[in-house]
Image 1 (cartoon, one colour):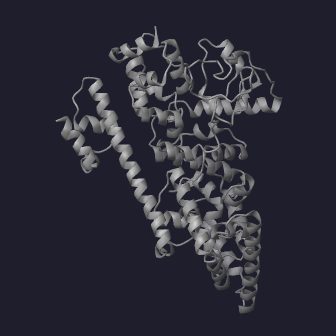
Image 2: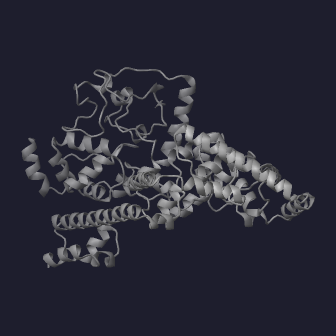
Image 3: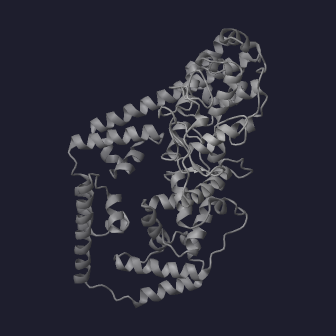
Length: 531
C-alpha cells in the first residue's frame, strides 16, 4: 500500500492490518520499526498517526528511546491489540520498578547514566537467524559486551561503511544501515575471549531478570529490600562502607544510598551492577531473596566489623559514637545496639581510653589541619573544587567530625568563602544546569548541598538569587507547559476514540488529581472551550 493511501486510511482503522506481537525482550524502538515497515509506513507523520500522538510526544520518544511512555503504549495497544502490560516490557519500565525508581525521563536518565548506548548495538548472527529479525532491549546496555548465543562481540556500527547506527530512522528498515543500505546481518563477526563470554553470560542473566515483569512490592519497599541484601552480603565479607567505596572508586554516600535508600537517590544502575560484582555475587542472588525473610548476618562478623570500625575511628581521632560506628559498619544504630555484647564492648573500650591532655588535643588538631591542607592541594591539582565533602572523603573523616576542631572548621569556612564572586556565580550556574539535566530540585537547600554553601549564603547574594529564582521560574513554566501538552494529548486521544471528554477521564489518562488541573487557568480554559 502507498504511504499516502495508508496515512489517509489508518486514522479510521481500529487495528493495523499487520500487528504481530513483540518478540521476547524486543525493544520498543525495534517493535515500532517492524510495525511501520510491515505496514508500509515510511514517514515521521506516519509514526505520529501510528501512535495517535503529537509531534512533541514523538520527539520525546526519539530523545528518550525505549523509556516508558504511557501515551505511546496506550496508542500502540489500541492499534495492535497487544496488552499495555506486555508493551511496557519492551521499555525500561520493569527495570524502574525493580529499583523503586520514578519513570520521568530526566529523573530516570540520571539512574541510567553511563549504562546505555546512544545508538544501535546488535549481533549480526541473531539478526540473520531469528525470525522475525528484531533488536533486543538487552543490547542497549553497555554492561553487556557480547551475544551469549553466538559467543561474539556486539557491533555498534555498520559492518560495511562503519557509520554509527541510530535507534530510529526514516524510512524504517530493520537490519539495514540507513547510510549505505548495507545488510547488517552480513556484518563482521568478532569472537569473544573466554573471560568476556563469562561476563556476557552473567550480564545477560542479570538483564533478563531486571527487564522481566515484577510482581508485587511497592517502589520504596522494593528498593529497601535490595539494600538489605547488599548489606547482608557485605557484612558476610566483613567489609566496611569505606572499604567498599574505595574498592568501587565512589563516594561513601553512594554506597549508603544503595543500602539504605537515601532521599537523593544518587546511585546509578552501573553502581548497583559493579557493587554486586565486588561482592562476588550475581544480581539475581540480590533480587531473588524473599522480601518477607530477614537476611541473617552472623553475629561474629558484625562484632569483627564493629571492632574494625572502632580501630579506624581511633586512628582518625574521631569519637566512638553510635552514629560514627554505625555509619562505617552500615547498619542502623538502634539495630546495632540491640546486642548486649556490643554495648559491653564499646563501654570497655571507652573506659580503657586515657583522657587526652590539652597538649595531645592540640597535637591531634595540628595533624588534622595538615591532612586537610594536603587534601585541598590534591583536589586543586586535579582541577576540581575543594568542597567540604570531598576534603572529608580524602581525609577519611566525616565533615561533621572535621568541624569539631576549631582551626579545621575555620579553614573549611575560609575555603568555602575563598571563591571570588564571579567564580561563585559560575559554580552556582553549573549546579543549576546540572540539576536541570538530572531533573533534581532547584531549591536553595538542594543547590547549597551540592556546593557545600549554606542556603542563607546563597540567598544573600543578589545575583545568585536571580540565577536560582530564574531557573525555578523556568522549571515551573516548563512543567506547566508539559502538563498542558499532556492534557491536550489526552483530550485528542479521547476525541479520536469517540469518548466523552470529562475532567475525570482526562485525569485518568494524565495520571494527576483533578485539583491539580483545576488550579491552572490555561487548562480550565481548555475544558470551557470543549463545553
